[in-house]
Structure formats: structure tokens, C-alpha cells
Amino acid sequence: MDQAQQKALVALQPFIIEATSTKNPSPRFLADLITRATTAPGTYIFTELLQLPQIQSLRAADPEHLSVLTLLELFSWGTYSEYISTSNLPALSESQALKLRQLSLLTLASPFLPLDPARPDPLTYPSLVSSLDLSSHQQLESLVTSTIYAGLITARLSPTSTPPRVQITSVAPLRDVRPVSLPAISQILNTWQSRCTTTISSLEAQIIQVRSQAAHRTALQRKRQEVIDTAVVQGENDASKAVRGRDRRGNKRDLDERMEGEDDEDVSSDEVKMDVDESGDYAGAAGRGGLGRGAKRNRGRGGFT
Image (tube, rainbow, N blue to C red; front, side, top):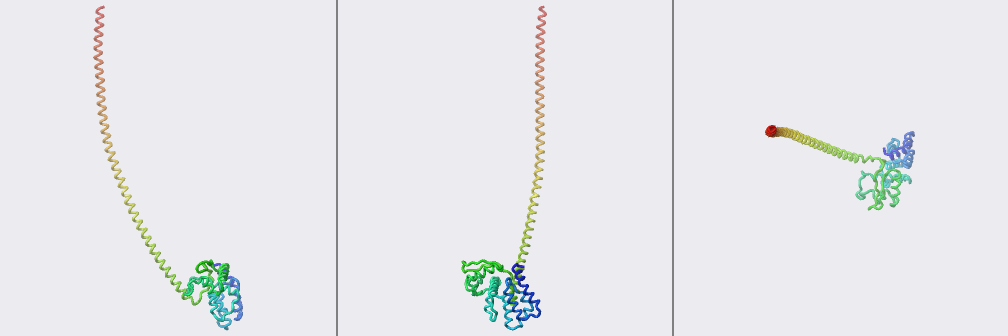
């Protein structure tokens, strides 16, 4: 519950208790109770008081007391301009006039208020001055300021705009619903329900489309991954075959190189042996020749001796 609404209900409770606890209240007593309730500080909502059987009994009373009941209805859902246009209503005190103007300002700021073709914007300075029966823009600004301080509206004055305007951004839920406006409210709610249904259907269709697109992307990604995995496996198999082929060719080449190396070693060994044999023959021949000459020489010497 809104804080301003809660405060208004608390302020109204003493008058409700007084009306329900009094046995056989007279029309004068009830009329006086309504006057005191509409005058008391902080009472801005009157639904519970208006719906009491004791208060509704004034409809069968004399016109003087019936006019007090009509005044209570204006405080519940009416405006100050309706008070002016309705005849035979009791005069308002200063505090009652201020309160009814404040409550009328809440009604004029309602987005559901039907626009008057003669005054398309009800929140301009000229329109509000006329609707609230004020004499100047200064009185209007004073009224708006007091309504803001009372916590009934959130607003900002724009006296330099064209035309000057009261920018009302929020209002407290203090105004009652007119009985004659119930069909219009029902039509508004039906329109709102139809729009909500259309919006929900559109959102559900978009959700289905998004899920279908996501499933399609997932399937496509899975198929691409399978193709990539197959290509990778095939590439690894081809690489393995190529490596085995290179190993076989390398082994044959190494065998040929080893065989060629062994042939070279055999040739080198034969050459070494031939060199050794030849050296030995030369040495033997040399030895034999030398020995013969030496022996001959010795023999010759010996022969001379």
C-alpha cells in the first residue's frame, strides 16, 4: 500500500469508528460527521466512510442533508469544477476548498482522464487556473507546492515553457472510482488484456523461432566438427603411411651404403696386404742381397788372411 494512502486511511479511521459506534445516528449528526471528516488534516480518501450504511442512509433524508452526501462523493471522486457547476451544495470552508482543489489536481493528472477538445492539455497553467477556479498563476503554484509537500503528487513547475505547464510524474492512489466510469474501466482492462495476450503470443513465437535457430546451428556445428574430425583422422593415417614408406626407403638406402662401405673396406684391406707383402719381398730381397755381399766380403777377407 502506498504510504500516502495508508496515512489517509489512518486519518479517516476515527470518523468511521464514530459513525459505526453511534446507535441510531441522526441525519444532522451524520452531516456534521461528513463536514468534520472532509475538513480534518490528512483525510484524503473517503471510500470506507462513503460506503457505510449509516452514511448511505442520507439518500433518503431531506435535500439539505442529501447535499452533504453529494459533497462527500465529490471529495471521493469529483473535482472542484463539478462543485462549482452543482447547485445547492453547502459552502466550503477554506481548508475544505484547499483539499478539494488538491484532490482535483490528482484527477486532472490522471492518464485516463478524457481530454476536452477545447482544452487538450489539462495541466497547463491556463487550464488549471480555470478548472480549479483560481485567480492567478501564483495561486496555482502555491497550490501545487502545498500538494507536493503533502505527498500527494510528484511534480515540477515549468513557468517558462510554452505554454507554462505543471509537469506531474506521479500521483498518490487516493481518488475513488466513479460508479458511472466502471464500464469505461472495464473496456480499458479488456483492451489491456488483449494487448498482453498478443504480446505473449508474439514472445512465444519468437522463443520458438530462437530455439529452432539454435538447434539448427548446433546441428550444423556438429556436422562441421564431424567433417573436421574425419579429415584429421584421415590426415594422420596418410602421414603414418608416408612415415612408414620413408622408413623403408631409408633402411634400403642405409643397407646399400653399408654394403658399399664394406666393399671399400675389403679393397683397402687387400691393398694394405699387397703393400705389406711387397714391402716384405723387398725387404727379403734386400736382406738376401746384403747378406750375400757381406758374406762374400768376409770370405774374401778371410781368404786374404
